[in-house]
Amino acid sequence: MSMAFAVVILFLALNLGVGLYRPKAVRLAEKHKTGQNAEGVISDYYTAGRTISTWIMGLTVAATIISGGSLIATPSLIYAKGLVGAAWQNNGLWYGVLGTAVLGKRFTTLGNRFKVSSIPELLGIRFGQSARRITGIMIVVILFANISTQFSGSARVIESVSGWSYAACIILIGVIMTLYISFGGAKAQSWTNVLQAGFMTFGLVLIAVVVLSKLGLVNMITTMDSIDPELVRMPGVDNYLSIPRFISYGLCLMAVVGIGQPSAQSRFLATKPGTSFKPAIIFGSIAILIWYPCMYVAGAAAKCLLPNLNSPDLAFPQLALTQLHPLLAGVCLAGVLGATMSTATALVLTASASITNDIASGAVRRMSPRGIKILLIVSTLVVSLGGVLMAIDPPELLMTLSTLATGSMGCAFTPMFLGMAYFPGTTKAGALSGGILGAGIVLVGHLNPAWTNPLGFHVIGWGLILGTLVTIVVSKLTKHSQEEVIEPFYTDGMVIEVEKG
Image (spheres, rainbow, N blue to C red):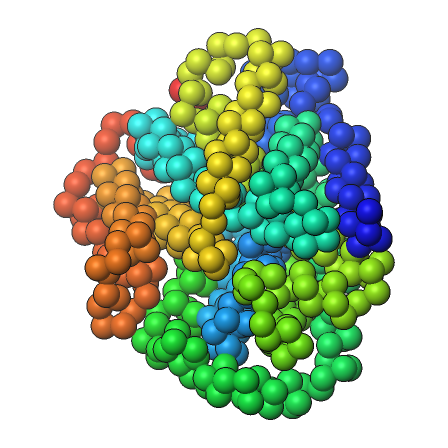
């Protein structure tokens, strides 16, 4: 076993240890915190009893944004398409912060007001129980693609240091993640995110400092220009990033779409009541401003030092293995796995919540606490297995799969979240029709070769624009249904008991 692989295995074991050390979130039948009923078990598992502090929340949101798919895919994109990949990815510098600023306080207030355990449950109170189940199904279906991105990125890292087959690496990371989230719940997830963020920061800064000291920034750009002039010029290799595409995606729309990620916004349901979000925004911003430039440097350096890799997705792992001492390379690659685990656990937990707390909510709440705990584990197994199966044959660039999942989710839920949080005139028909259309446009645009990106705008731009317009228009043309709850969502200080189906 190589030293780098040994470090990676130790890191995985450390995360499992932390997750298994904090099983309080799934032991309410024995240790009482919110009671031995179904509501107590579900709430404590998915929201950690609403005890997460603001600085931990800020780091967990930031760590979720910098997924393993992003940490592999961003250097991969710059390696394959050039420095325009940095312009493409600059949305990540601020879309999570924007989501925290726009919805953080609001979702924390609403989550505590209605005592909900998942995003669809909150949507169900506002728009009715049918909306709760529909959005729960949408989340599960779309999240499978993003979960598979995390598995695939992790497998590439382990493959690069172990010599194992890709399939074996997929199975290994799938088993570890399933155990970690099944026995950890939201509380252990949040604390391990802090550990993972530390490894991510150290690894990214380390590799950026090493390659910059070896190449120098100017020399790096000059070398890329000598390899292919398109690597350092707009629109990049293969005309990758046209100006309209840059405006519609890389500059602003992905930032707005970042508001609509249930896996990130669900963190706010676990935050302490009365939390100030300024520290979270500042802390998360600092972390992201460190991480992203380091990823850009890694991608550019890999192109200069390793110009003939078989796959662009190997850029970051191979750069670490060839330029760092094996021990430090292992720490650096452990940071990639930390990014993967932080995002994957958030995605799996969100999908699991949608299955147990929303799609099958009526049946679940008639079960015993022990039966619910077993169901929580089974649901995470199903979600993880789906992600593993989808990751067996990933696209050449992980960014393709990551963009598909993130974009369709954001276009589906951004108008819905904003309408629920701030606009009383939004109706169930408007929210659902706009959300389904927005996600549908992104899926069709990515999967249909005939899609031509009208006016040069990225398909996510069209999904968000048309989905928002349909939400507004249909809401104007329809009335609120009798099951919708309106006033308590927009009256400060009002607390009511809502029957949960």
